[in-house]
Image (cartoon, rainbow, N blue to C red; front, side, top):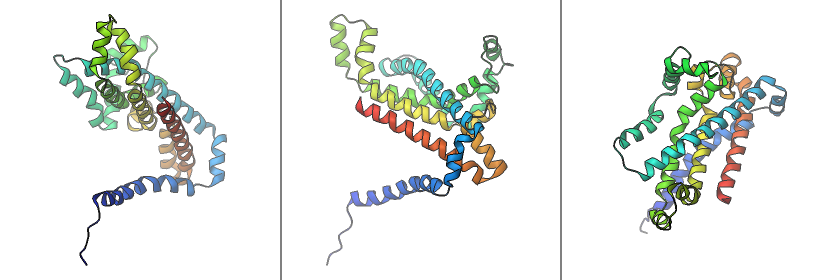
Length: 258
């Protein structure tokens, strides 16, 4: 009987299944190995609750600021060709290749109250060392690339004929942007915003250097793990994971409905 090799789809499915299990098993075991009373008790852990809400607020604000400044930049990169465009795109991608601890040091050097720019910001009440604004700055720095690239890809996918027709009918560019480009790129922008928010929520290295206090949830997890061990860090890790997954699923559902 002649041997028939497995199909490519079957082979790829097996390989993909191993990766899926590799990603899923740690999440499942995290909950299975954490006592239920510890999970319930996290509600009464005032420090943990404050850290989680701080992470949620900072990540949300960082995402909103990246949306405000990143979407216009993404539109320029998608629609126009100009001198230095390759350099701008390289700068946008730079945070992806910088180690997070290095990113934290760079942000601190540039925007601390002892720097020129940071001194001006501190006079406006925006001091970043060990403040909420420092957390937001670190989160925005490490996550902005995700949103900009997602929005740029969304804008590039829009057929330019729509714009040409609208401009022929007398529509100004701002109406073309809000009436054509933005609605047709909404799903890409929202997906980028979701991933940006998730990336900001998970940041540790840069925040550890820029603003150790007040403590975000990931910082608190690391602190409890180093001081008290795995059992002390697992309950807040489970709580943060559950909240992140819930928000992620809700936003993805809204994106699909859209």
